[in-house]
Length: 199
Image (cartoon, rainbow, N blue to C red; front, side, top):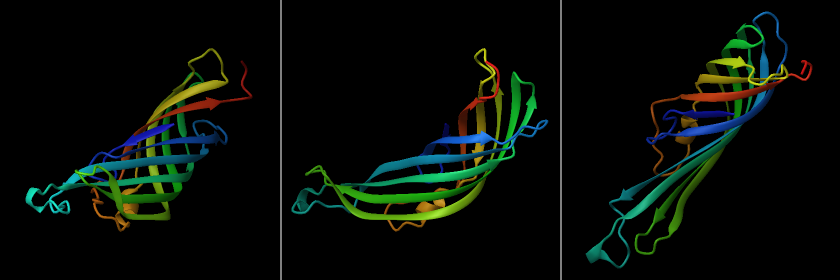
C-alpha cells in the first residue's frame, strides 16, 4: 500500500493512493530485484465564486454562481526495482530505485451551482488515456515483527517523478490550473511472505 501527497497537479494539495502485488525474484548478497503490478487512484475538487455569474431574472439582486472543477484518475502501473538490502535476516536497510510504466486514464468536469436553486449542472467534461514512464527513488527498513520467518514487513519513504499534472493540463475543461511541481513524496507499507521459510 502507498500514500502520496505533494501538490502534484492543482493549487490545492493533491494526492493519490495505491495497492500493489509483486515478487522478489531472487536474493544474492545485497541485491534483491523485485517486479510489481500496482493500481493507483486519486481525485481533486475545489470550489470558487464566479463573479460574472448572474442568476437569470434577478438582475437587481444579482448573486454570483459558484463553480466546481473536479478531476480524477486511475492507473495500472508495472514496475521493476533493483532493490538493494543491507543487514541480516532480522533487519535490513533498503534502497529502492524503481522504473515504472503507467497506463493512466484521467477525467475532469466543470460544474456550476446556482445559489438560488441549489443544484449542480455539468457544463464541461473531458477525458483521455495515456502511457507514461517514470522513476521513483525510495529508502526504507524491513524486519520481522512476529516470531516467524515467513512474514516480514517494510516501511518506505519515496519520491516519485510521476507527472500526473501534465495529463490534466491536456484536458479542455474550464478551471483546471496546473502547478509547477511535478512529483510526489509518499510513504509505503509492504508485507513480504516467504512460503519456503520455516515457521
